[in-house]
Image (cartoon, rainbow, N blue to C red; front, top):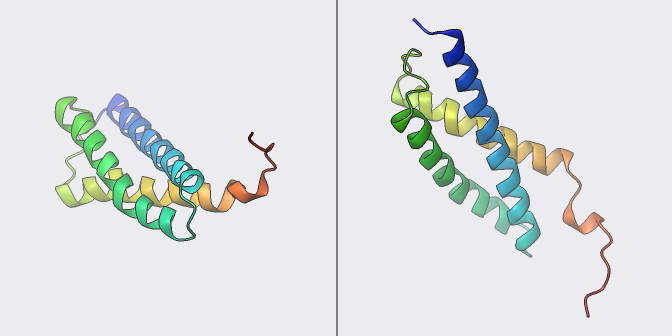
Length: 106
């Protein structure tokens, strides 16, 4: 049986993964000067980061011990959903880097 603390920690990990995905998507949008480069980098590199943190949180620290999720459900919930949410938040709700007026560099 799952405890309330286990559900709260699971939700915190999902929120942290969403934050990671949004920040890394923003980083790729700022650094890459191509139109589709940030999309490709986001879809390839962010799942690797989320997989590593999933292995740490759910392997080393037994956060989801009482949830009894299978491997596919855990990867979908801990990687797929935060990746989609983080990418959507940064792409749709945060202004594009081209919309900011920055001073000229010398």
